[in-house]
Image (cartoon, rainbow, N blue to C red; front, side):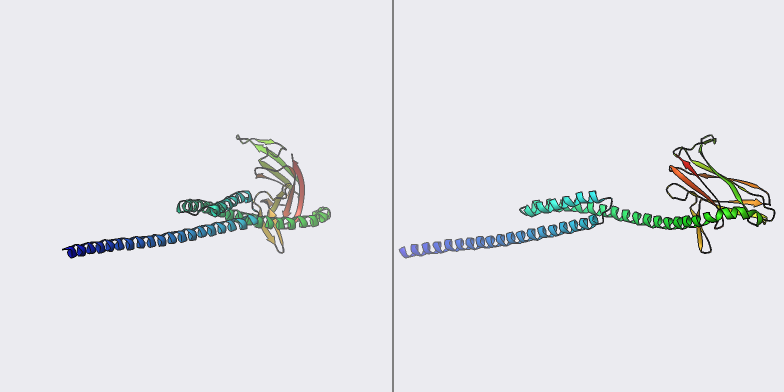
Length: 294
């Protein structure tokens, strides 16, 4: 009887030990699994932190390159670049937990969107500057060529005036320019103030010449303001190797008699200073004058 009791106690102890063993194995497995999960999480967070840091570094490099181009947006670009640098410093000093990493990711996305918008503005600005530079260079070349040509013809103008009556060429004289303010009623009021002027009236006389060829005669009128800009049409025409940029043309029917020509040149935002008016017969300067607006 005693042996049976001892045997029963032994079996009970063995059962308890077996249960404890199972519990221990389950606990050890859970600890191992949790450790692996924690290691994976730490590794993932570290990797994502490095990825965000790299993205921020790329963002900073983009700003550095844009700032180096020294555009009119440099101050705004520098301010945004400084925000990126500060966020990089904050991220580097952070603990790197999921919550803070998510915050930095959100801030990076906002900075990236701002950068994309600014880069688009910079691209548009560069394109406009390039177009402006090209147009300005082209205009300067045409104006310089025309100005040099005018200077050459000035020396010949006096001699031409003495001989024009003996030849078949027409003489253009009495070149005048008046400036006006046009009221809403249509009335033209003379003024010499640039701020009030919105129309120029240019007139000249084609002298009588009995041996000149009759028919339609076209003259090219060039008005250059105090900033060396050609006003009006700004059209360019070529005569052989020479080219001329003019403000407008006027065509008259010539019948060997004196003809009075008067044309109007509307405009706005006239600059103060001296203006030069040149009248060309094709590429030949036949008359010139100047006037001033104050």
